[in-house]
Image (cartoon, rainbow, N blue to C red; front, side, top):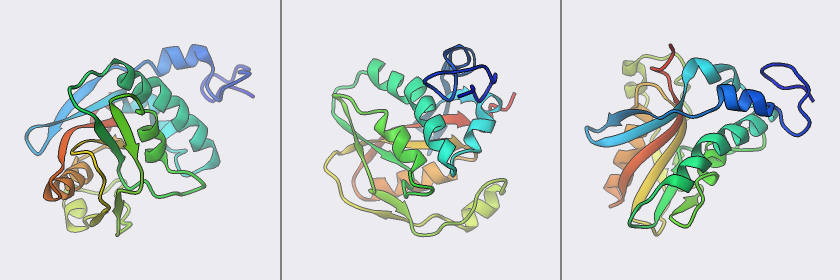
Length: 193
């Protein structure tokens, strides 16, 4: 197969190792939601925008798996914390045969992080792409919470734009007595440079 980025032959991957090193070497970007919860993102938006657009296609499964290994999996290997925590993919319902947020959450699996699936699902499927903060706030996701054991949580999503989805998810978990200690995303739409 050919690399999706440079179009050179790549035997085992949709993105060749050279392009993975050049374009998918993570750098942490940080912002906060709810005043104190850090949101870490790994890639500049402009570097991965074409890859993100594949998320609801068959190809997206492979590309999200590559990005998850290069970012989330590496984070989990290096992360140290005093307690075991759950990772929760935002609205990890299946589309096109897989869930992109479940792929990202699964890559965090380690001795300290346990991925939990189907624990925070949106009951409303409003499309947020390109929408204003006002539009997003007027159309909340109305997440349905399903109980799980861990008290502390890492929220996982592919993109943070305004932070409204992560904020709503964190508020739902806080109302259930859970503590969101941080959020992880592949990219922050504010890093478009």
